[in-house]
Each structure stands twice: as structure tokens, then as C-alpha cells.
Length: 116
Image (cartoon, rainbow, N blue to C red; front, top):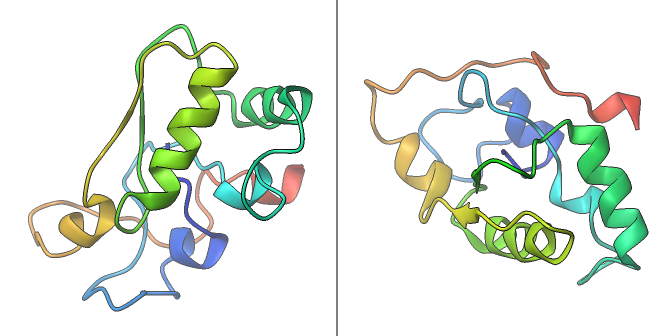
């Protein structure tokens, strides 16, 4: 689950990375959809955002962002609403974008940001 902003997901906000875009087949749930600054307002809002993302919280979920900070916060929130196997991809896209053999997609693709 990619929790970066839409600009990062689409590939035009590089955040200092050599390449932009998102991993093929990743779900996109921007961290900002779960927060009101630092933490979610309530579990109901978190549950609504998770349902919108279509993530199956009964299966392992790996969250990632640029370096892991937003991903860690999202994994914590997912666990709070029942995703027992939420984990963080440490170094996230900072690491991925430096490995040319890992394909990235650009553009909106599977992002559902405009639907919420």
C-alpha cells in the first residue's frame, strides 16, 4: 500500500529520487486521507478510508512511502482498526527508485484518490 501523495504516486514529485512513479499493482491510500495533521480523528474515519482503498485487512499489508515515516504511521493506524499483519517497507521508495531493475509506473494508473 503506497501512502505517498498523488504527485509522488504519479511520478512528478520526485522528493529527490532519481526516478518517479509507483510500484505496479500497488494500492494507493494517501497518508493525508487518514490524518488530520498527526493522527486520525477517529476509528470510523480510518475504517472508511481503509474500506475506500479496498485493502484486505485480513491479509498481510505492507505500507510504504518515501522513507518509511508515513508508512509506519499508516501501519499503526491499520493495526488499530484490525489489520493484525500490517508491516512497513523500511526505506521504501528511497531504496526502490535507486534500483533500475525494479519497474515503476507513472501517471494516475490505479490511484483512486479522486474517488473519495
